Amino acid sequence: MKRSLFLLAIAVLLVVAPLLFIHHSDFGGTDGQAEKMIQKLAPHYQPWMETIFEPPGGEVETLLFSVQAAIGAGIIGYIIGVYKGRANRKEEAK
Image (tube, rainbow, N blue to C red; front, side):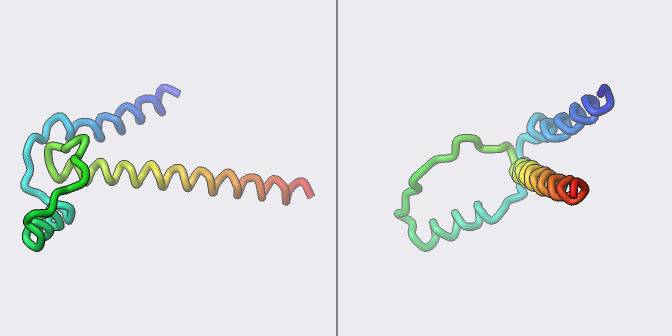
């Protein structure tokens, strides 16, 4: 139990550390490029919404997206494992 808590703490630290130490970055993604292109094609366009949280740099945004994808993959993998386990137990019961 101690080991899994230790590993969880390390994982959380690896996710949170870039948010604390990276203050500015020049790395940009497709969102920024799309915004520039929209401003070029339609200069009077006003966005419908504003961002709630602006990460300090592009790397942090990529990190958050990757964490979101990993959590989603973990949930999907867990669900598939549960159904596979149920199917195996039904086969063994017969």
